[in-house]
Amino acid sequence: MDDVLILPGASASLVFGLDWLPLINGRASRVAYRIARRHGATHLVFSGETAPAVGLARLKLDRTQRGQVLNSAAQSVAHLFATGTIALLLELGPSRHWLVAVHEGAVVARTDRLFRCRSDAESVLEELKQAYPRLAMVGMPPSIDSVDLPLIESSSGRQARLLPVSHWRRALPRPIQWFVLILLLALLLPRLWKLISPAARTPAAAQQMDPGKAWESALARASREIVMHGVQGTRTALHSLYDMPVRIAGWFLVNAACMPHARGWRCQARYDRRGSEASNELLLAKAPASWIIEFISIDQALSVWHIALADLPLNQHALKSSAGNERYLFSSLQAIQPAFTQIQLGRPRAIKVVPPRDAQGRILPRPAHLPAYSVRSVQISGPLRSGSLLLPYTDSMAWKKISLTMHDTGQVGLKSSRLTVSFQGDLYETESVRPAVEEREFSAGDLPEESHGMSRPDAAGPAWPGGRAGH
Image (cartoon, rainbow, N blue to C red; front, top):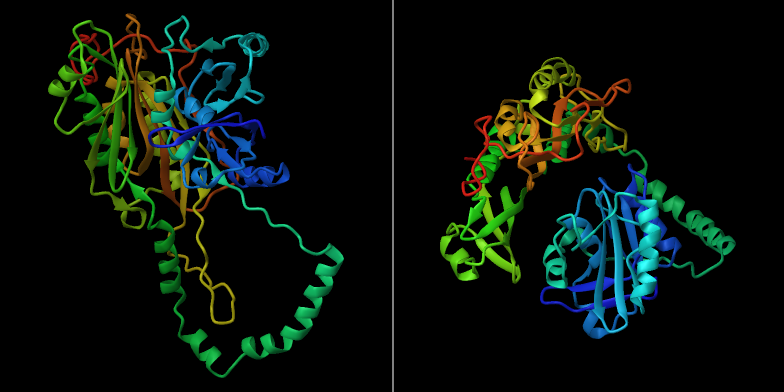
């Protein structure tokens, strides 16, 4: 944890050599801080709920470093390779070799290490290959692109940010603390009783409080920050991915993604230079005017564009009931399931609402006519052309990420395509969560691990490499 390396960059400093520990889903973010304090870490980075892991570091920063943005290099690599198992061995300088391994978007424990000798790193790599037989090396066959420091820095964002860990230290032994606490309570309780004792105006205020209006305000506060994308927002993101060129001026599409941002979408696409005639100048000339292009290496470019949306908050949306979705929506998804490789919906869980209280601190009774909101996690993937089949059923969905991946294969099938789209988000419903509800997963059956083939989103036949992603 102490043997860390900080390399300054253009936008942020990269930190190498963190200690990584796996976490259990559920309260992973809360457990991460508890583990960091137990190990005496000064900073941590949390990978997220989908692939929970925590990286720990004990940093001694000077004045210049305290004002810098610190990003974990290992977590940035995990963001680049969210699926599969990969390893990266990178030379950072003389007698300084960095080894990191990522499994399904989480940094593998006992990696993110610095070695003085490359042979020492390669011996650890051999142990990793025995633990993970399907481990692939970055920059080595079969067709995993090389990764360098500029690419790692460009892919690092808030998900890789190192956060400070606050430590509360006891100044006094525990018995003395208890004695001081009892003494303070003995001195303050009489005064507190006078302040909270029932007064003549308290019953009147309680009688005037309307439980219905109080609960409506509580529900509005809980749902204010939840924005639904629905059919219109989903269609907007899909059309943007459909219109994206697969090849432009000798640059080829690798992957793309759209994520919610400031009442709209923030989309980005990565292109690789593969033609001898391709150049940065031609790409800037041929690219759409709305794109902001950043060249992350001599052969890689990242385009970014924004889409504005008029999304509706949750409390202004007509949601279906949980039982109704299980009967009708799930049946509709089962009907289109053959066109997708995965349709998975999690168990419903209640949206947290802070209950209103009266003047005496008692929880007000909740009116029976008010809705109770619940949410299910949603993960759907399949050929890009199948995305239009999903649109009619996204009315009550809010997406966290819609991503597109390009595969190098010529095989085309009903569930396989060179262009694969993936949806990650939530389905919002009404009614209370029922404990007996079990997780439902619609899988693709006996399928290969990767999708093959390139298909148009509106037809079953193959598309041409020079066309757009949606045509």
